[in-house]
Figure 1 (cartoon, rainbow, N blue to C red):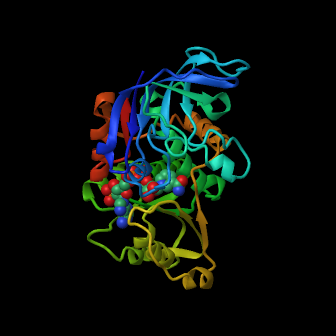
Figure 2: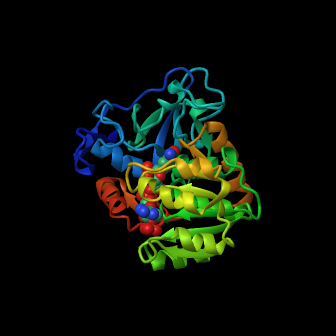
Figure 3: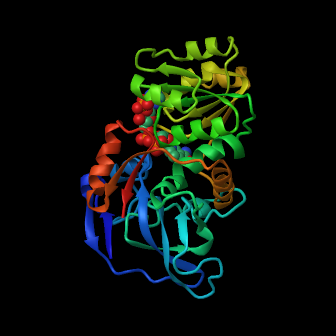
Length: 335
Ligand SMILES: NC(=O)c1ccc[n+]([C@@H]2O[C@H](COP(=O)([O-])OP(=O)(O)OC[C@H]3O[C@@H](n4cnc5c(N)ncnc54)[C@H](OP(=O)(O)O)[C@@H]3O)[C@@H](O)[C@H]2O)c1
């Protein structure tokens, strides 16, 4: 089978297309003929050694994929040949609280990932694809969508009528906008691009702020909420955005700490305690959370927003496209 492997922490160009033996499923495992994968910012960070420079190489990258079952191991009861399935980001985090062992099962990290024609996964670490979604659409869900879902509804407790600030228009943020709208929340979106802001308005965002032309965007957020601040923030920016987020979340509000797009760095914790803010780290979510999210997606007939689909042969170009930051929603590779 064909697969890509990262051979050095030197960015997308250190990922090579190779012939590898087709893996065979063991007891309780299934083999999936991958039909589509999707990219996350993490995949870029992993390729550059920024995410975890101690990961073992060579490594098959990417956490997210969807396809059909091509072989089943002994004892498998949930799936049959031909079933359409989507991988979980951490197939070993089935339910309950995360543990070190569960989070080490993250695909495309300590374990080989989805950028291959065939992959072997535990049957408990995949889920059936809702019938209205294509492989490409389903492949967008495991990391970005589950993270947004967990941030808003599992660890967070978003209610209809609440206000949410969503930063940027990448994978996690567009899912957060879609889910928050499904739940009847008011969504304020920041972006570097007026054209992208026009698109999120069509998707139901009520208030738009260009963070390039308005670098102190915490002020309009406070004004838009009558000086109170928003109930919740989907924080994907990291050190460059967190101080502003803390200034425009309401007293006692919730900041889901998800991303580091502007990098790490120092910040003053004083306002967090003075203003009773709940600052909560989120690391994707469990298979059980994913299953709950899929039910909601099916009921709402929600469709993920795909920016562009690249052929398998152009996987490196897909990563570079993501690196450019020009995308809106998810970048997909058809396998
Ligand atoms: N903790 C977790 O479990 C988890 C899971 C998934 C992702 N993440 C993290 O979350 C972040 C986003 O991931 P992703 O896959 O959604 O990335 P992505 O699709 O590459 O999103 C990039 C977008 O973020 C926006 N952005 C960049 N700098 C910004 C800033 N200073 N303020 C506001 N928006 C900014 C830009 O939107 P515009 O073009 O509109 O400006 C950019 O297009 C990454 O740091 C990633 O590592 C964490």
